[in-house]
Length: 82
Image 1 (cartoon, rainbow, N blue to C red):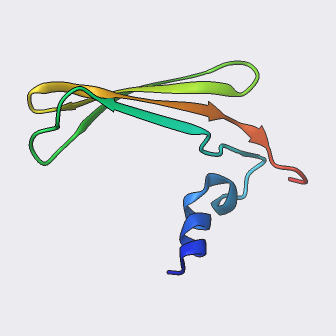
Image 2 (cartoon, helix red, strand yellow; image 1 turned 180 degrees about the vertical axis):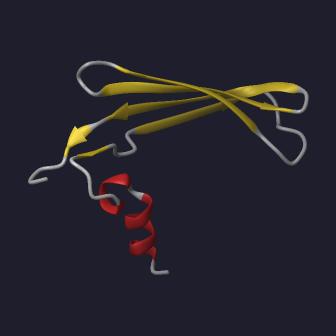
Image 3 (cartoon, rainbow, N blue to C red; image 1 turned 135 degrees about the horizontal axis):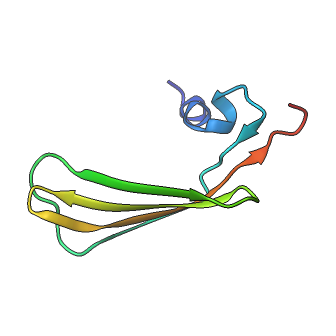
């Protein structure tokens, strides 16, 4: 798959035919120790406000417990002409 095509299929705005899109605005990950084992668990909470802006907050964990957090800013906007 060509690099540009891969980017287009990964984008919710490019790959879905809907009246709105949710571009990736920002993602921050902080770890306080190196994860152990082959799996990383995600305990995620998502909230949206009335204007379409939101936040995803995730606790990252492995077999020993929490290893860090991930925070992502969200926005949902209408697609022009949809």
